[in-house]
Length: 200
Image 1 (cartoon, rainbow, N blue to C red):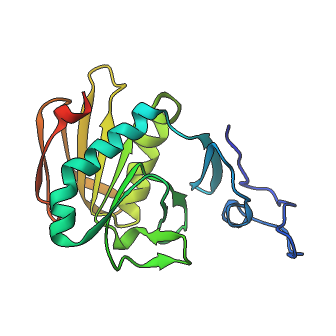
Image 2 (image 1 turned 30 degrees about the vertical axis):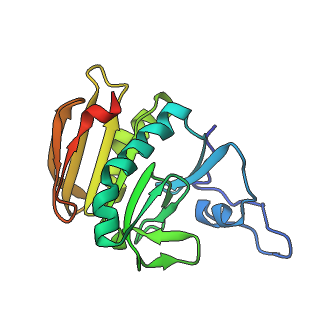
């Protein structure tokens, strides 16, 4: 299910608020809890999509397990889903499947981590989010200054894992893709050799 607010004035308001929401971001900030769905603001549109399958979240959990030694050693925070990231600038709000952040990562309000303070985000591609995960989110994360994006794509014709790094001018300059099952070097500041066979 997708909702868009681009180009129209909204009438939804939160209790006690008399001003109408005028943008997707305004509406996002007044949404009540939506069990079973996740709400994201992507390119000025409010997108509501079902939460992923157990297999989808398991891939993110496996990544968390693999990275646990360096997370503990460096005192970073690892979040498997459920954490909103506010993209610096346009204030789009995304929910990566996995987030790596320093303990003191800056926030927008109390609920959103700021993209420019992150270390790495990961998206696990699913049939309902393939275009957004493969095309929109890399551009948004790069524009927001996220140093590294990992794209786990089990539904590609040839399942693959891609690491994108060195964001400049709204795009990642370095893209390394391997067939799922092969080793993949995640660059600095992570500096980790990931055995992508964990996703098989």
